[in-house]
Length: 295
Ligand code: PMP
Image (cartoon, rainbow, N blue to C red; front, side):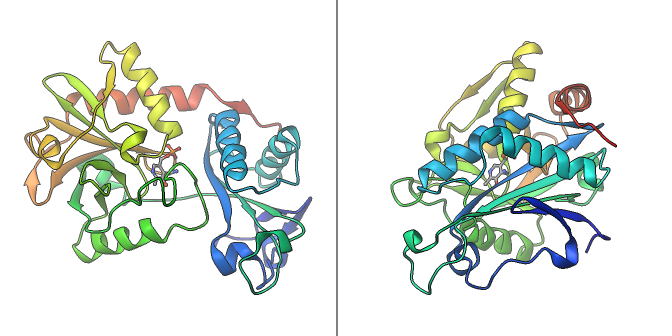
């Protein structure tokens, strides 16, 4: 646990020990709610507006009335970062359905709750950023979007958690999740890219990939580098035969993957394009974003 954080909870900044949610909150009882993960680099919040737009879209998709306006949410987020004097870190912004009865009915939850944690996150061991991750194919598939759209960043992450358990039990930190048709969609918490003969590819969102904000940023950088990324329906074959592979995500940032299903990807070391992209992403992240006003 982090030391003495100030947490935003429904309009107030309160000490961590007082930041409590009811056991009757449907976010807890049913995973009924939405969230965002956002990074702070060098005193600036990276792509805050994009993250908040995705949050509000997800809330709308599940008929969740957000009790704060967009501007109020933006201010609450920046105030929480400032109150914790955080220059580099990670924000978790959560909207739960709120307190209700012991049935599913969300309309019996009169008011959504909002909480914001400004802290830090480490998704993978530091040496994996140098040496690369090893991936497996997870048996757990991404749900068909007609069941639950992978675009909804909901508090129900059990699908991803089941896949993550498989990765960890296989001694890997990450894995590739296929969609119900067997095409590559993404990883348990990141988007996936491959490089083949100098060309970059990533699965389209229609394959079940989250429309990741880091994915978008990386696609912009790749275009600037003269290696524009093409969205392409992908199978495991494409990763087995790729020259390079890397993953992107807010928590993960840009990280190389060097092994897949026990086979080396390319020569089994982080590729040149991946390394160049990582450098450029760091520059972008540290020089752009919404500035935080610290006391
Ligand atoms: N896919 C999944 C399933 C995720 O949870 C995340 C993390 N939000 C991502 C991809 C990467 O998205 P982003 O770059 O917006 O963090």
